Image (cartoon, rainbow, N blue to C red):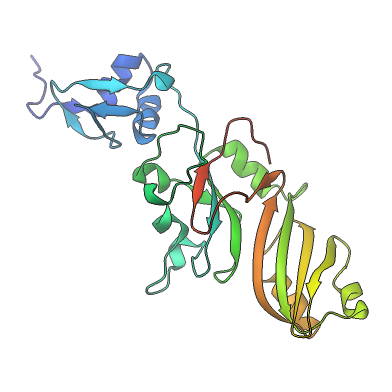
Length: 244
């Protein structure tokens, strides 16, 4: 005769029994922050439980939960590469904390630290650049962001040192890139750019090749998703009806 361990059973097994779903589906529900143990959210599927009260959020009752996608206003100096973090420098994953969640977030999704670690960023910007970046665990969205055959349009704003002459502006409009002047002084020119897809460093090289020093770069829009109204450092969950 086999006896259940006195240490209890894995939370994933209890949740799978409660929802009548597979163990992998139960783990997704737990990591997504939809399960409470004695009134507190627990996001570890391996947590051992015995007779604790287990509550599953109604949105997860069928064993499936929305896959998380985060829209963030990246601040200057934050790196988009988790495996290349410099000394004293924060990555996107470091600043994904509840205190920075925008008050405009209407998703009502629970977001846990464990879930954030699973997010992938396929829309990186340079460390010094700011603006819209996207992190997701949703395979459909990741495929869309990575699509090289039909890349999303990036709307960027930039400030460069010195005026931009009509000749230089012409050279800043190669095939696939639309550049216009937003404002200009004797010292600084503000530009608006739209291009399909974006590889970090390509605009810096374009400006440098035309004798311009890039001072600031910001992504305002990616496809149909806009940065507004997020403030620097803030993030929100992508709503179900939003499409890139």
